Amino acid sequence: MIPLLEIKNLTIRFFTDDGVIHAVEDFSFSLPKNKTLGIVGESGSGKSVTALSILRLIPSPGKILRGQILFEGTDILTLPESELYKIRGNRISMIFQDPMTSLNPLFTVGYQIAEAVTAHQKVSRQEAKSRALALLEAVKIPEAKKRFNAYPHQLSGGMRQRVMIAMALSCNPSLLIADEPTTALDVTVQKQILELIAELQKDFQMSVILITHNLGIISEVCDQVLVMYAGRCVEEGPVSSIFRAPRHPYTFGLLRSVEKMIPIPGQLPILKESAVACTFAPRCFLAAEKCRQGEPPLFDVEENHQSRCWFHDQVQI
Amino acid sequence: MSLLLEVKNLKKYFPVTSGLLFRKTIGEVRAVDDVSFTVSPGESLGVVGESGSGKSTLGRLVLRLLMPTEGQILFEGQDIFSLRRLDLTKLRQNIQIIFQDPYASLNPRMTIGQILSEPLQLHHVLPVRQIPERVNELLNDVGLAPQYANRYPHELSGGQRQRIGVARALALKPKLIVADEPVSALDVSIQAQILNLLQALQAKYHLTYLFISHDLSVVRHITNRVAVMHFGKIVELEETEKLFKNPFHPYTKELLSAVPLPRSQMG
Image 1 (tube, rainbow over the protein chains, first blue to last red):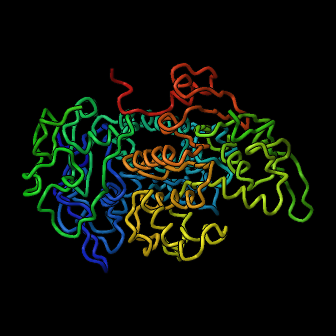
Image 2: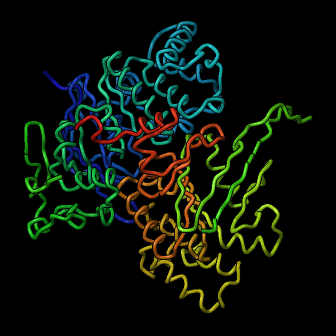
């Protein structure tokens, strides 16, 4: 069976005045149908850039240098713009971190959802309206009829994020990319939104890529998790096995900083040239001579579980 | 032991108005509604609640950035709302704040050195020529090299900027620091760094914290007692460990159960 999405050797660089920044380096993963993948990493690890590249939305001066992004077998990177429009927002849709800045303050939320419907489907205005209303109900907005004519500023943060989700679902996408969907929200509202995403994932039979820096969120909703560090995948595997026994010191450090408030020393490097050593070595408690001499490959440590560490069998919780 | 801060029946209602030309009050928002608590020197009290629960309004009242509708706040036995001029200036030295967003709370046109020396100049606490030395000392306290004094905020990462926010709050050697969501804009790995820094500084300078946050796991790590706010009222006030082991109020239970933990589903 072909996976829904397959990324192969993706390399993204930003050509800035200060030099070339290696944002994403030789990055690969595949996502089966109806599965939820979590991508974790700190700000600057390249997780958002990877998400944007799936819809070919990398802002200048960023460029995709190499690689393939296969969505249902077709390479998104070589598609002409006109074909891309048919996928973007239709087959693959995306929700962003801040629901206030991603909604247009001048239009009612109902109008904005209906607009997303008519952009991709040949339906009458009336029908688009009723679809939009049904979507508002699907994302469990109370009194959907009344809220249909509300402007974004009249809704709370959680409600706005629900509207964003309704808009993203308007064309029954097979892939939903959620970039930090709950970071701007309170814990109790965050929980509701995560439950909603998990529920809709089943109802709409989609795959979800959830991008976050919060490991707790990953464990609530994801099947598979991928840890990014300095533009690379450093560990990938099923949520249960990674959280029970992380095999990369960075994942270990992240877990420890959430659970025991023991920080990881130092900070994320900004890479201006190709790495010749392990990028995590300067912050790593296991670092040895070997780590400073060569970059480790991804080792298979268990079934479906990979780690980019020379000493992956010495990481212990 | 004498109390550092005593809040008595504090109320803050904001009017809700309508009409563009003829403004009239049609209602009120009870942001803080009859809140009382005390803080001892050296203690750190957490205030948790959702957005809109009134926790930030409470912080602003303690700083006297807002005047209350009713009630009193006593700082070392003095009513802060009746203070005038010089006494108020003195109060402002003793109560400082760390803001949530280290990107918005530092002036982009000032160097770190200027940012840190501004409070020292405004309050005339040091002769001018001793200021650079004090700035170095502050940078050292928050774990940054002295060279940072010549840099601008945009050259720093989020965690480093928040360190500057902490250093600025420390500049006047305050007794009480109100920390309003000091780590919620930071990555988890950096959050722990800042929290540990705040703890180390508390021990070193005998600081008292009023720690406002919506994140219970952060509060658990750093506070002795926690006040849970809900719609302007304190619904539960308990020692931190007891609260986490044995939450009493249903709202506290709901808050606790909402925190996503990496290994909550596994034994």
